[in-house]
Amino acid sequence: MIALINCIRQKLGRVPTLYSLILYGSLVRGDFVPGTSDVDFFIVLEDGAEPEEVLSKVRPPLEECSKDLEPAEVDIAWEWLSNLRDPLNLGYPYKFLTIYQADFRENHVVVTGEEVVELLPEYRIEGVLPKRLEVILGNLERDLSSGNLKMLHILAGETARLMAFLHGSSLRKEDVLGKLEELGDEDALKIYRSYLAGRKKEFSGEFLREFVLKELRKIKGFTPRLPS
Figure 1 (cartoon, rainbow, N blue to C red):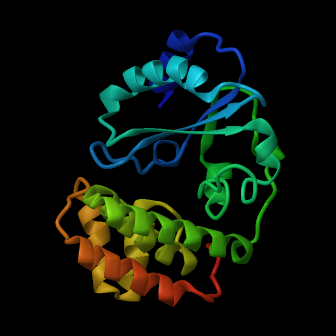
Figure 2 (figure 1 turned 30 degrees about the vertical axis):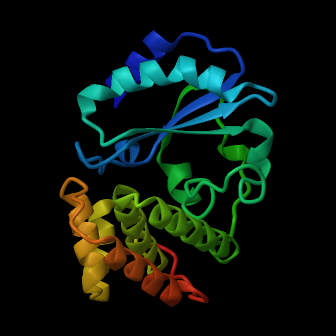
Figure 3 (figure 1 turned 180 degrees about the vertical axis):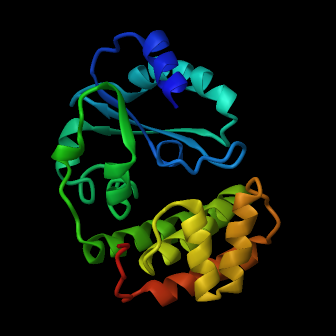
């Protein structure tokens, strides 16, 4: 991770209107798996910035410096600075800023620019869960209509992880797997194990659709147990 950060700092240079560039997720958390995990970046832009202009400057060094890690993808999320005062209702409600915000707070590194966690409101899970379910359902409809089997597998894996999280798991892959084993949900286990084995695409779209809908029905109205 240190080599990645040093590489980015060396190659990126100063980018006008870039407020902060943050590395977060599995690489920082310590459960990154080559070929399976993404390298996750969050870009915060000064208000009024042109996103595509900044991304065109930032993306090449991020991808170049990450390639030796063999990520499944280099994922770059972005948001305007003023939207951080309420990510749930302003801009896009990224899961790492809303329902999984505690993990983001603990597992992130500012590569360049300013710290942002002090700007974020701390949400109660009960307050952000309905929006997260709406996003999952919207993505399910989109992926089904486009026939995007890859994204359906990712969405089903995320649904299994959310299920484990709401039952008290952290986001560490081994913790999620252990919680799903404890819960005894065979479909969730099959889907999550497939994800861990290089994001295999081995299920039909109909199976994945029914799994997501089944699990969301269970989650609706669920009272979460927070990780200790």
